[in-house]
Length: 174
Image (cartoon, rainbow, N blue to C red; front, side, top):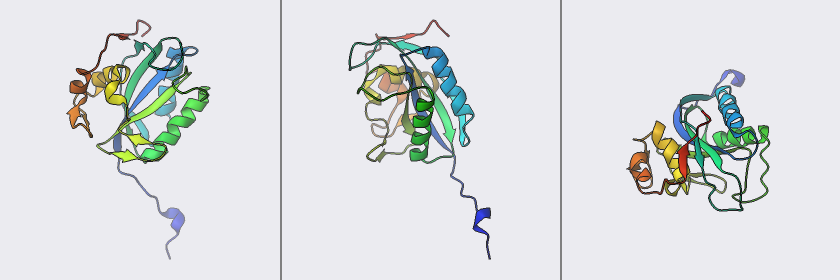
C-alpha cells in the first residue's frame, strides 16, 4: 500500500511577470519589502527585477504619484495560488481595498504567466489593461522586452512603442 503522505505533487516551473506599485507611505521601502517577501516565498524565485519608475496615477481620485516596477518570477505555483500569494503580501504591507483605482500602500498584479490566456472571475491573464499602460510596459520592457504578449502576439518592446510614456520617469530614489 502506498502512503499518500509520501506523494508530492510538483508543478512544472513557469515564468510569470508581475507589476508592483505603491503611492502611500514609504513606497520604496514597501516595494523592496515586497520583493524580499517574494524571495522568501516557497515556490517563487525572482529571475529579474526592473528599476523603479515614478509614474502619474491613472484614473481614480486625485492622489500622489506612484513608484512602479516589474519582476519576472519563476514559480512552481498555479496562477491562482500565485494570485493568493500576491494578495497576502499586499495585506502584509497594509493594503486596504476601499476605492477602485484609489491610492494604495502596495499593488501587486499578475501580468503574464508563460503564454497562458486565462479568464476566471478573479484572475485574467494576461492582465486586461497591461498593453495600454506605460507604467506597466516601461518596467516590463526593461527586463523582458522579447516576451510575447499572448493575445496580441507582439513582444513587450513593440507594445511599449504604442503607448504614451511621458508620465513615466526613472526614479531618482534608486
